[in-house]
Structures are given as structure tokens and as C-alpha cells.
Amino acid sequence: MTHSARASFPPGGKAWPDLQAEMADRTARDADWRGGRTAIFFFLADDEAYQVGKRAYMEHFSENALGAARAYPGIGSMERDIIDYGLDLLHAPDGGRGVFTTGGTESILLGVKAARERHRALGRGRAGAPLNLVMPVTGHPAFDKAAILMDVEVRRAPLREDRRCDVAAMRTLIDENTFLIVGSAPCFPHGVIDPIGEIAALAAESDTWLHVDACVGGWVAPFFERIGRGTPVFDFRHDAVRSISADLHKFGFAPKPSSTVFFRDGEDLDRSTFRLGYWPSGLYTTATMSGSRPAGAVAGAWAVLNHLGTSGYERAARDLAAMTDAYVAGIDAIPELTLWARPDVTILNFGSTVVDIYAVAERMKTRGWIPGLTSEPRGMHTMLAMQHAPVREAWLADMSASIAEVRATQAKSDLAATY
Ligand SMILES: *Cc1c(COP(=O)(O)O)cnc(C)c1O
Image 1: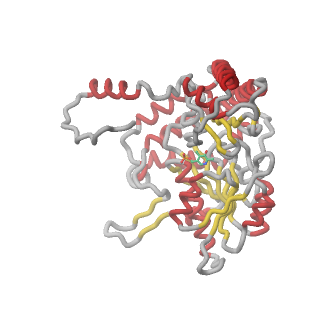
Image 2: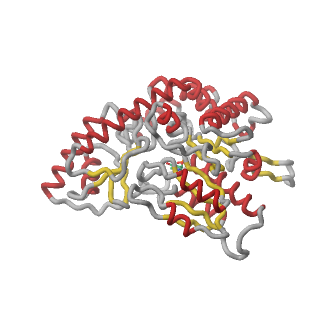
């Protein structure tokens, strides 16, 4: 939204009905997530789970999860349950620990910090040279954020033909100042799971910390495996995997902001924990980077996890898999389109060798869709959740119509891919 002039501080006195009406008016033209119009940003399992998350959130809207230990042991118990559920799901050994965070970015910050602390404690590396982390080009920008904050270098490895990390190329980037290597399950741009087994072998051989970024897949890919999709193993069953980030507010179907980071070892949790002993208000310790944070998010995630449980997530995995297969079949049936990768979970990334795919995306936008784009290769991108199931045929029809227009006009687009 663009402002012509700075808004002045409000005089106050607006009552709720007026505020509600004004908010409805302001958001009337925002994307219709319920109608499956956005390629990302919202994740539906089913309406009942959505309602459970919303109600639980509102029940604990006012409490602050920062005070879980001192004031809100009930909220703390839900947090511990959530972490236990995740450790169980991801096959962490006894002694595994975790943190409930406000999002994937924070989960990643904590993983990177713990890995850096270990590297420092080992006294490794060349003095005077920056530490570095090595990840595929598809690694999430949250690692770059962490690198800026911690003043370390990011080295990006190229991909293989199948758009998974080229582990041989990754090996050449590692040196004595490498404190962390990363694989994704799946990566955001192409939706494929990196060869975690091969990366784990590299991590073991070089005794380097391996973090698996399962922000997308962490809470749902294990259920894809359980329903027999042949989804690759990416979790603590690989001995070298030392930490995993997994977002609840993506395919855990929980309200935002909610994510988790898990550590194989309690010592590594200590390395991610913030402690300050000399503040006038006394010892200040947080497991998170953020201070105050919504207890509603804890309650929402706990309620959704207990509402869906094993049977609900297996059902969601089956529904998501069937929908993804149907979208893939629909794309395969459009001769101008090429899938840039076969999705391991629900992310679609496709383009065209015949028409300018960004010109197609522009026409999809005119038809009321908010498409995602990838720049390398030039493509369109969607992270499918269940709100996309009822609109599949409409989406495919609009895609065909958009392609026909672009073919007829040979249109080119100068759009730039923007996340
Ligand atoms: C979404 C995402 C993140 C970051 O999560 P936020 O919750 O947006 O901070 C990290 N990694 C991957 C692969 C993601 O898709």
C-alpha cells in the first residue's frame, strides 16, 4: 500500500464496529487465501483443524510465552509436549532437545548459533579468517540473515541435474573454517529433498555440524513416508544430522508464528541458549532469540497437533499427495509446460521452453491468482496446501488460457522474480 502523505497519530475514539468495518474495507482486495488464490503464505489441512487452531490461539491470546517458566506452567507444559512430539516424529535419540520458536527464520538462527558455538569451543579454524557455512544455492535466505548477524560467510554449492545439492561440489567448498553444512527437506525453490544421506556422510567425514532445514517438510514429510510415498529419510536417523528446523505454521497447519528447532544433544541446546548474568534485573535466559512471544501460538500448535494426531496427519498427507499428483498430471498434460523437478512433497516448480513463463504468470495475475516465480530456472512456483484442492481445475483452465494468449501474442515479460 502506498501512502501519499504520512498518516497523523489518530485522535482515538473509534469503536470496534467502525474499526472492524474499516479493516474489512481495507482488506477487501487482499488475496483470497481461502479461495486458494495465493501460491504461498497459508496452509490449510481442513476446516475443523483451522477452527481448532484459531480457538486455541484466542483462548491464550493474552499470555506471554516468555513467562512460561515463571508464570504460565500450563503454557510451558504445552511447549514441552510439542517438542516431545517433534523429537518422536523425527527419530531423535534419548537426550534430544528442542525449542519452540516464532518461525523458521528464528529456528535457523538458533541452529546456526549453536553450530558456531561448537566450532569456537573446539578451537578450530584459521584465526583472522571468517568462519563459513556451506549450503546448496537453494538454501533459505534465513541462513544469509544468520550469517550477517554472526559475521560469517555463506558458500553456496551448485545443484545436480535433478535440482538436489551436488554433494561433490559441496565437498570442495569445505575448509577448516567451515562450521556448518546445510541440506533442505525440501528446498523452497524446487521442492526436492537434498541427498541428506550423502551430505551426512560428508559431515561425518569432515566432523562438521549438519543442519537439515525441514521448515517445509518437518511436520508432514514423515507422514508422506508413513503412507508409503517413498519420501527420502532426512531426519535424526542419519547419525550426522545434528539439528533440524521444522515449521509448525507451514505443514504442521498451526497458527502463525510457530516453528521448532531440534538438537540431537542437550549440549547443543545449551549452545543455542541465550544467557546474561549481569543485568540489574538479574539472570536473563531465553531459549529463543525473541523475548516476548505469543502464548496463543503455543496453544494453537498444541491443540492442532492433538486434534489431528497420527490419523489426521496421515489423512492430510494422503490428501496432499493425491492433490499434488493431480496437479502434476494437469501440468504434464499441458504441452507447453515442463516441471523443473518432481515434487518430493507439495511444492510445484515448472516453466516452459516454448512460451515466456513470466508472461504467463502476468496473465494468471490478471485472472486473480498470486503466482510465485523462480529465476533459475525461469519458472512458476506454488506451495500446495488443501485450500488449493477445490480450485485445481479452474487454475489449470486459467493456465491453459493464459498460455494460449502468450502463444498468440508471443508476449515477453520483464517481471523480476521477487519472493
Ligand atoms: C519458510 C521457510 C523458512 C523460513 O521460515 P519463516 O517461518 O518464514 O521464517 C526456512 N526454510 C525454508 C525451506 C522455508 O520454506
